[in-house]
Image (cartoon, rainbow, N blue to C red; front, side, top):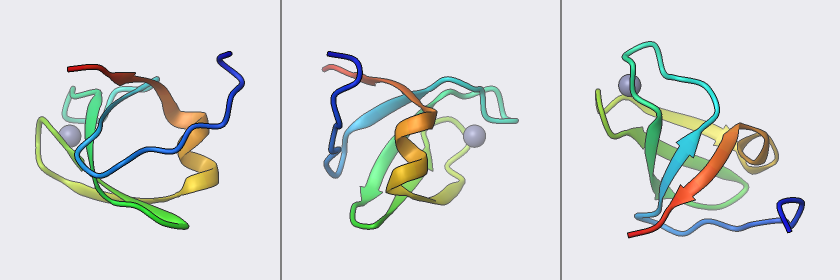
Length: 64
Ligand SMILES: [Zn+2]
């Protein structure tokens, strides 16, 4: 079930496997598509990641 391809939605909070240099590890989805736009929930820096790469980086989606 971990191999399942997941799609994420705007406002989802994703936990990455690696820490951001700021020490944060959770990111908020702010745009979806072929490229995903994510905002670090700790330092508010914005990154753009191709969806195919995002899957490798995400450890889990934070449920709220
Ligand atoms: Zn950060």
